[in-house]
Amino acid sequence: MKKHTSSFLSSESSILRSGAGFTLFEVLIAVAILGIAITMVLQLFSANMKSISASEDYVSAAAKAEAKMREVLDDDQLSEKSSSGETTSDGYRTSVSVTQTLEDRTENLPVTLLNISVTVYWTKGLGEKSLTLNTMKLVARQID
Image (cartoon, rainbow, N blue to C red; front, side, top):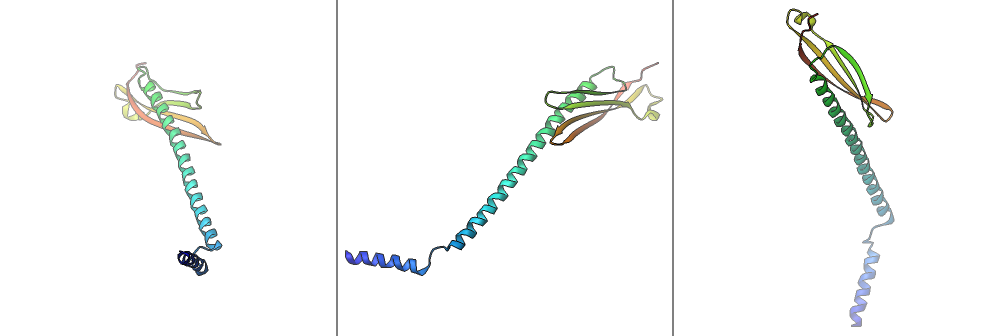
């Protein structure tokens, strides 16, 4: 039994002498590469979070603009006008512009073509963002 133990000890000491492990320099390089890789992954994650936040703002603005556009289009007495709505509690402000367009093409017709523009503004960071929806609507010409 003593023979077996001494052979185990002698094989262990030969492994240590052969240099089969990693040097301190190799370990430091591996840790540095790992640190750089983790930093890059975290930066990509942060950029994706910013993009998700921006897209949420645009989706919310588009929903508000579409709701306002439907409200304007449902008006049976639609005529030329321009208005700037109040700011909502969540920081969005709408602006509506209704203008007559292509008058030379519709002057002999019993209809008027109106260009409707709804713009939603909101503040993000230091800058103001906006989203605009445009459409046209034919309305019966008002007889003066």
